[in-house]
Length: 326
View 1 (cartoon, rainbow, N blue to C red):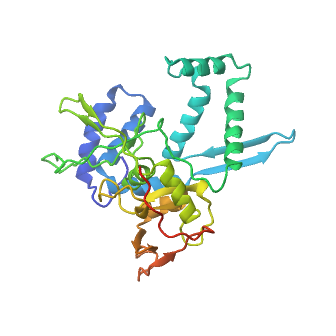
View 2 (cartoon, rainbow, N blue to C red; view 1 turned 120 degrees about the vertical axis):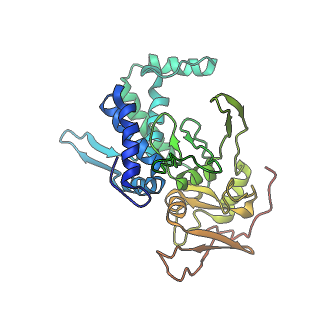
View 3 (cartoon, helix red, strand yellow; view 1 turned 90 degrees about the vertical axis):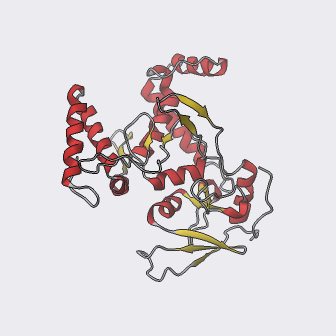
């Protein structure tokens, strides 16, 4: 359950522990640990971000050559990146590892090809990873790719007007969201970045938990709009960043849901994944004045918060392109 922190009192931890002990009576050690993590996240939303930062900082990838010429390595990923990696493995080896059975003809044929492949499952996974790396390395740097990730989902409960609290200690469940299929919490910054990059699908539940409605996917930028952004920005607009459009994501200047942002090109810019992450997590902000975009640092980075002009890397040096029909 962790220690006392800002907004998390001893009384809140004690009451949460009582609930947890009841819940964990039939769980094994791994399940109990996940339940404890989820319980802590549910009462300590502020701590979710710091714990996510700590896990992100622990990520690594190391490789070394073996005497026989083979390359050996190890890695650790945070829950979000780990979910995407596991989804990749599931897609290339799923039919052999108890993945879902497909009913559509094309998917059934693809699954059967994987089952009939003479290579071992481990070999398929390794060689598929290298193929993905080759494709990425050979991609046109001037192309910005769509970021549809339908197999890894972030689940977010829309906050009620007033969260319920227990009368004894004021225990309030304030968890932000989680990765589908796990109990791993994600921060509001991660949610904002994901919605900004891939959109969201609203699902309405009734009080009894029944599904009342599934809305259409809310996407931000069409393929044509992404092409226009690539031509205008020439890659990540962050100051001194040289990442090309193929390494960039479309960021919405105003959060689509929270701030009512529009799907217009003058409301979007390109940012590479690390800078997109930094913008949402560390309190940076980008504003548009006329045809120019300005980066405003948080007080922790610059007490004066002096705006920095973001200059297009495109050789065309275009202004804001015409709005394209979505």
